[in-house]
Amino acid sequence: MSVHERNDLAAWQGPERRLQPDIMEHRLVAVLASLLLTWPTAAGATRAVLAWLRHKRILDHPNERSSHSQPTPRGAGLAVVPVILAAWLALGLAGWARPGLWPVMAGAAALLLLSWRDDRGGLPASLRLALHLLAAVLGIAGLPADHLVCQGLLPFWLDRAVALLAWTWFINLYNFMDGIDGISGVETAALGLGLALLGLPAGGPEGSALAAAVAGGGLGFLVWNWHPARIFLGDSGSVPLGYLLGWLLLAAAADGHWAAALILPAYYLADASLTLVKRAVQGEPLWQAHRQHFYQRAVQGGASHAKVARLVAGADLCLIGIAWLAESRPLVALPIALLVVAGLLAWLFRLGR
Image (cartoon, helix red, strand yellow):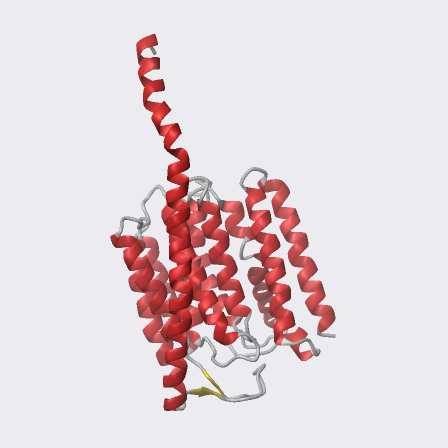
């Protein structure tokens, strides 16, 4: 490169560097606006849906596998998910769309409708799983070819297969883990905030604004779901939220934040996966409702829903900090995250004894 070319490059780079604070400020404004608009909107929409569900007597009645004792309206997903999708639509039309946004929004809307049908009458587990797979296929088909979740370590077809299976599992575990007051709102807010913060300093500002909208939806729902809950999320909420957050996590991994994408949902991944393995070893039906998760056993042992939700929130905040560490030192951050999750599981296990 000649001296003149180097001078031209420096002249071009100089203004770009001076613009960096402005770019960061614009990203932060978009994230805060997304969070602060969806939060009260989701809370208001949930209040309206709560009144409608009470009027229609659409209630979740306690049974031997429930962690609640009073009939409670179920179906807050009818409020939370549309608010998030409306925010995503606005962000997309404003130019803050990640590649593949529109197919994912369509998949989430379809899962909302189908899961609401499941809330009302119940669908066979095989049909639910097939629909989750189809929605994940739709979302993955919208990903650019160079967005590789496994960092190019696997052939393209195998990378996509791993992403499909991981996404489908995440959708279902998010549904499985929605079993006590407050836990889904806490986890949704934590994952959304963690992903939003992750994209601020570097690439992926669009993902930051989208994730902030999900966090706002989770916080708005939490207003009405904190113990004692006045409304439950239902499959119409937990399934689409798992789908949307799963996509954001896969997108973060494809952007190079693979360690953070594992760390942020680490508690949910560990609790759901360990419980599934235990049930499989014992020969129990894997898709049948139960109360064997670590957080459920803690409540059965006498801990309040609020105490368990606060423990999960505390661990999630630690995981957000560890995810930031993972950006520069992933091999240091991953064992620390493992220790945090193991400590939470051990604490919950002790409360459940």
